[in-house]
Image (cartoon, rainbow, N blue to C red):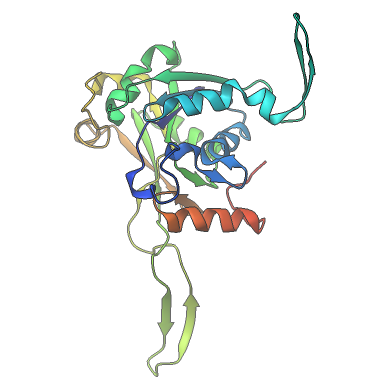
Length: 260
């Protein structure tokens, strides 16, 4: 099953981290967040990726085109018949990555539509954003999707609270203190979709088509959307604070999304 990852946004809210990188290339540790997302899928056996490129997409292309050289030790024999020998020391061997130019100004709906040919004849495919990590069980997500006959499954997550939460009893004595708890109210879309190929009937190549608006509303109206509840870790990288949080977790070896 192929995994489509939306990698084309401009990331305007996180420009204070870097103006020279697309958001999926912002690092957690020494690797882009996009790599972390892909490693999460690969841990469940899914290594066939379609990346929807847009803003600064050439940098994502360069990263993967030069991946063997940057990830491996290399022996170079100089001369008119130069040879390069890669001494493989990474775990990404066998990944298949389609790097698709879907247009710099194109919105999410148009991007997904424009990679339709790369899905081939597959009945289902996975879809997510290139800026969020989670400890979601991909295998369980797929099993849930296949248990119903709806076109689209969306993962509903509880976003982390922005502020601390304090609980007290009637006397005012504090009974619980959580610095940044998961929200206890409603859920939001965390991405990590599973889609039947009929999804393309709701999409077009229109560069202004936003997947989360008209197409999603039509899918809901036709009773074709199912919710997979995920109560574990989920975090997007929208702001500098998010960037710092994810890197702090990684540096402390406490990254919940690391399943490899």
